[in-house]
Image 1 (cartoon, rainbow, N blue to C red):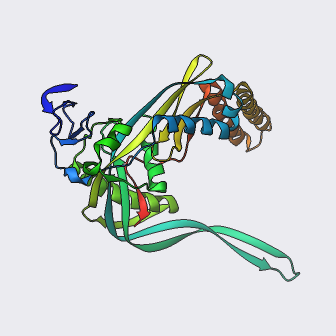
Image 2 (image 1 turned 90 degrees about the vertical axis):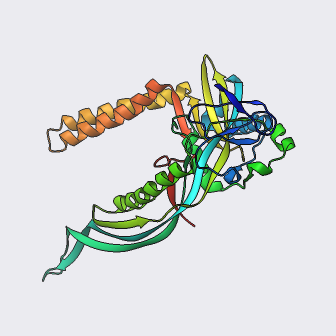
Length: 337
């Protein structure tokens, strides 16, 4: 909402702010107005975006490459295209220490008897390992407290893979801003809060890494240094809303290269039949193994029910959710400098 007294320092236009707004970017001239919090305006960077026409072209290219959408292209209609800049904090955290963990592994040995017959015997053993940790993690996460909007987190994954060049917002000319004047979402976490979050997340990144490859962490002694090189990134995110029959679907694109990062797509009839067949197949597996009366009956029931539920739920959804790649949490790390 517009708060009285908050106007752009450069052009005097009214600013739309909320009680938690730290930086408000003028929607008219693009100047970043620092309202509160510990943040240096010169550390705000923006990644230039494609325009609306280019995003529309990217959408139709996505349709052409999608096996299902291509077959219903004539039934699709773009309803609206919205662009906005989402704020993210990015920085580096050095971590150092050691981790001792246990892994259960299968050990096999072959025996040959006096008659020349060979027999292999296997058993499980517990092996203990100790590894040193000494690396710098690149971390990135939303600068907003509410990050439930579809596609916001998927942008982090794609940015980490493509690493597009950005420029200081202060160096952005008025002409550049006029070409793609997008809404900028409010920044609600300042530098101090971002550092606290990154410090905690750096430890979680290492812990999750060892959790994934071990059966038990026996000692975890890893320390994280103060985050360095923090900067606020404004990433362009476009959402294309399109219609199929009587339903509205949407696809989210990264503004710097037009790559689809996430989408909700209609499900054609033949795909629903495919999923329904999978649900029936799961029921048949459960019934067949359950009638056997053996020790596998219970496992068969569980397996068949899981398969049936998986495909049955997709039939009920009536739509598909596609993503370019998943992420483990709000802040993402693990990329070595």
